[in-house]
Length: 524
Image (cartoon, rainbow, N blue to C red; front, side, top):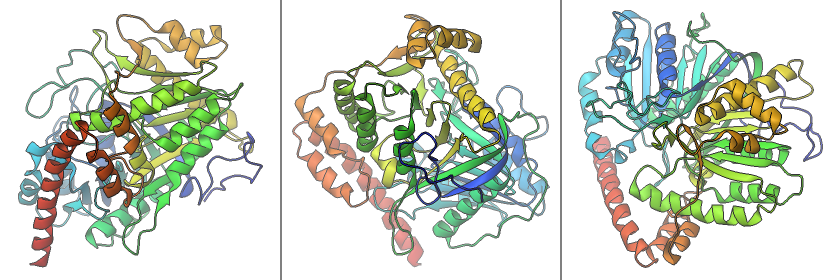
């Protein structure tokens, strides 16, 4: 293990943000690190890595769809490309390989027409070397939200991208991409996402996390893979080598064996406190009350950091927009009231023809000091109710490669911003130089009224009931015990409460039916 850093006075620029037991679980060495933007590159890299596996592959996630294509533009010859067929292929061609796929058991509530998929999988799976299991070891109302792939404990992927439908896209986010279709051939809107590929000790640590999750869900204890050659994808160039990487978790209290873990929330708060010039955030939701309060506090400082948030225009689905959209509107109102120096802006990305790009990435860059990529969103659930996993890299004066790490953090942030603006890196670098290295002013200098760009977001006006709904945290609690209390508060709201109640009732009834069937099948 690598040290978390010296204990220097809180608020100092030299105090480590990443501290084992506080803002992270473990800090471990990575021989290579590559930050991957968008699922086209991720799916191809994961496929290339799994093809090298000899002992074990863990796929731990919110959802999997075995029908998706992994390489849609130039698939490998003689190797199946659909996820299910591909996993079957690698098991058949590696006699000592075992593949473990663990999916949240209620993810089909998001896609109800796919509710029969687990039953079809049971017919498809042959033997014990390829296992698909459902993860229901979590409190009522919570979900398993990690997105982790571990290959032979030598290479791991961890971030925000699920191996499921509607995820595949390229950084071009073209309006008409013939490869951006679901398994039925239907096109879907552009989708932005991010993950990290790592090699070395940190991959083995993520393997420990994956095996522990598998054991909790299934009761089966899987031994670590023996030491072997790394399964790094040949085509993937690392952004950084020989660097410490922190693993941070959210885990809700559950039963006697699982205490509450809130490392991710602690990491967010410590990072926001440490920021000096720029806080850059990409997030699917913007609804965490504690994180918003920390941002408001920094905005009231005369010399505090500027804050840039990249967010989708709307949440995915009516119920989520009612819950998360109203919470976002309420928090933005409070934040803007505190933004006395004009250092905050939230943007939504659009394509060349003005189509909204859905932001699913979960990225934070603090100055050129810290980079965090993971599964957690800026909502309350990700801080204490759902199971999450984030990775973070920090540059400190005590490190011999401090400047190399800082350069990598700048590079990753700036290539993401350039992607959203539809400009080259050199154009963004020139704008930053012209604007005194202010990211906010550089974005304003480069963004366009028409074409690929970033658009400032202003929430639609909310009714009194919707404003109240945004304050209740309905369906977005940060602890399991708050779920029922928040629901009761929301259901008391006139108009909106009734509509939300119908949606919740349908989802709850379906979940109860699944739980009933699962319980009775386990009794047999």
